[in-house]
Image 1 (tube, rainbow, N blue to C red):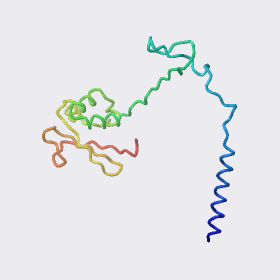
Image 2 (image 1 turned 60 degrees about the vertical axis):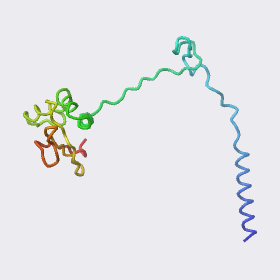
Image 3 (image 1 turned 45 degrees about the vertical axis):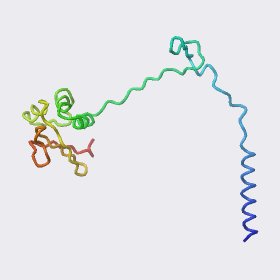
Image 4 (image 1 turned 60 degrees about the horizontal axis):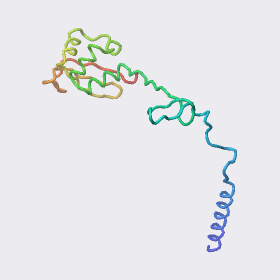
Amino acid sequence: MKNLSIMIFLFVTLSCSNLNNEIKPNPQKSLRSTNDYPYHWNSSAQECVTPSQNCMEIIIITPQKASPYDNFVYSVENGSSSIADYFTNGDWDDLFPNIDNDDLINLKSGTYNIIPVEDGDIVYYLAGPSGTLSTTNVDFVLSVDISLL
């Protein structure tokens, strides 16, 4: 057993030392050239300017537009005034095209709140006046099948 342990140790040691000898720096690789950086940092102006030295090009990242559902969820999470903004200015008609006009007026009033209740892929949004809304006291319910989004 002792001989087997020594043989395994020697094999691992020799294998590792061979790997270490194979890993060598590549002399062909060099640092980036100044052509990779179209600008340089001007510390007095606090900006990148030409000629080139150490500033990469400016990249503009445009976020994806939030979906009508994302906007709706955000408004529900932020209360009655946010809900009123969503139903006054938002794209609610894409999500709730058949909403009753009286319910829409109530949601736009800023006095209604919404409680989400999840049931699998369906999310029920219980709506009612902010002061009295509960899971047992609801004026109307909106529902969204999130599997279709």
